[in-house]
Image 1: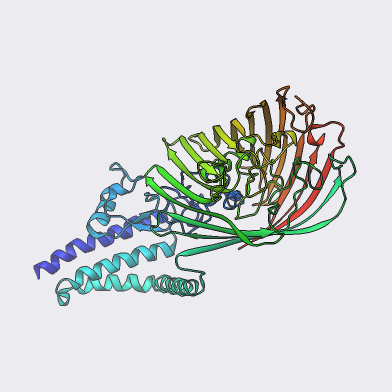
Image 2 (image 1 turned 90 degrees about the vertical axis):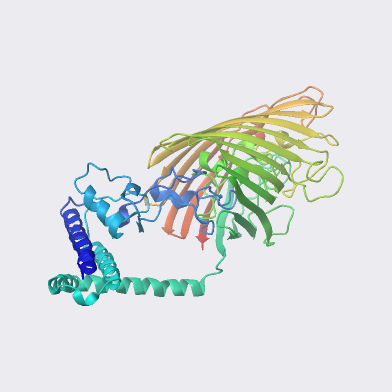
Length: 592
């Protein structure tokens, strides 16, 4: 009998503490609904964490920069990076786990008793209690249900026939008063379990997540000549497509295996002295691989990532490139870079990436990403575009390669980022990558993408990039890149590019995005007098070509958007004798 009375002496005060705290919270000033209480997840790759919540999904890089393995990420099966985290409640074992509860708080002792003696209080997953927010009847019912379950556990451990009738009457009245809420709570649990069962039965796989993107592009050249022939390029309206599928799996919960497949028919406006315009100037994005048939569906990305330590991640890839695997282009240029979640943002290749990132090509390699502290990250990568080729001047160590190093700074407020980048690259004579290029940025003038026949080429590239989010509705990014080319045994040349991008998130509609981009695409600024790259000995690009681009990505639904845009290039191929070119397109993207 003494044991029962003792148990009730412990339980009844705890029960009244529950009611006291819950009712006090209900009298507090009205606070936002639980669904509005979102906290940012600070991740190793802060590409989206600093963007406005309304446009988070509009700038997730997965296709060109796949979903990144984050050291503190609980699961890699979710491919979409988000700054939102669940506000569900989590059981705590000590009041010290609640960061916003202090010993000086008026309800501290009551909370301490409920948490540490009865286990009847749960905190939010961010480690807070939020004792000053309003309480819904559903939340009160959930707390009451927890307390009642705890009481039943204590009673069951003793002699139940000695329980006082008045205590049982009190519990009965509370159950009756909140019967509606308790029933509704049980109904919501049952409904959630039913939905979970449907999801489990219909999901693609229990260990692999499948995501996809389909693009339809209606476009036409409105003005411009072929810079090689000097004749007007055809003005033909085209309807083209691109499809990307991605499989993402995790074996330990901390690693990530990514497989990307795709194909399409989006034609590039030109290549070096070939194609519609006879130059890479104005090249559109997401072009079909010029070395493969159109709409040929094939493997386009393969990599495995895992943490070496709490602050270090290792990426091993058989088909990707070092700049993508380090993921630095995304946080520095988030509103123009490509992404699987919403499709491409910028409509040209140049608007997405600076010269310093462009010299690579898809192939095998290894990358290491290390977080030095909360503000600084170090990235190192080695890529070999012809790593799979056993022939002469090919292979992982004896062929074309790109070695990249970069320091990235992110401000404590996460609204400013800046990076310093260095790249050393080498291309053997006559080597060709998977995209059909030998050397150069695959953007800009013909001379900057040219080499001396039969001669290997080395380049040292330097870049400075920055991004600043002025407000949730406006951001700016920019870069300056410089390249020092050496045509082995012949001479040297210099290359340069710069750009400024303006982004307008939520323009006209929440989730939509406006973009304006102006820059000088890569051009050859100097060439040794004894080197001829096709324009004569010592002839570098003589004029400055400006790339002007605008687009408006309008969000129709969460998974469909349409983007009208244009690309205007002055003095194409860095030659003022060439008339301006103007290209317009309308891109529709479907995601699943």
